[in-house]
Length: 188
Length: 85
Image (cartoon, rainbow over all chains, first blue to last red; front, top):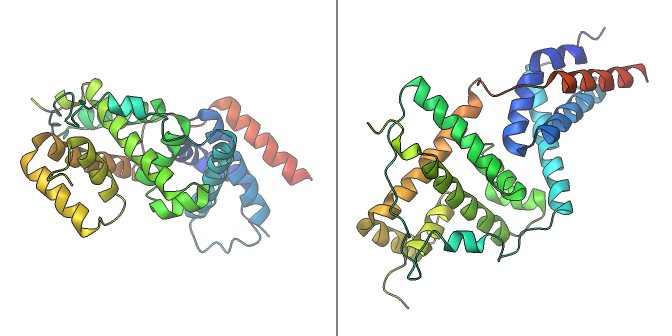
């Protein structure tokens, strides 16, 4: 009667769901949890799955909520970064008078496949180095493309906090890419 | 009031502009600064480029590692348990 099979979902979409979760949660374990919870929820809800969406699309929709749930739990457990958190690191990028401490070098245009894949690897590595909450808020915005207001609401953090986290994450990400030599990629 | 924002303040505005439409005074302040500051102009461009790369990538299939064998097995077991219950 029911042709849907949870093990087929795992076989066919497991890697895809994992990569998507991994890139937003920045932790293998959390990403594995997200995949497991998604498939369990899908199993419980399959009677309601009309089959009009492709299974991957349907599963991805469930995954999105599971990712937010996991981040929300983390935000509750981990202390929400205070204003002082990361402020020193931000200050070190600027001189006393508010000018950049180091010049911002232009980025090259990565156009070969090899350069692009190097850039993508670097982006992932740099994002993994951010503090967990910062990394997750950053990824919800920049990777998943959620609206800032929606992120604040879902995670229960104030817009100011959210916005400070995003701004710091962006400063650190850019700096990290530069430290890793991204400005030289494709700039020949 | 200062006649011009600093680089540090401009990065805050440039970042916020990635998330929402800035109020007119802030937008003007940012434009004024960007018009004369190469560093901040590059910073603002690089924020956009970063977003483009991140969003392009998730749409693609990629070479990032998939589920580890043990995790896959564990999840399969959990699904089986649920199916049996």
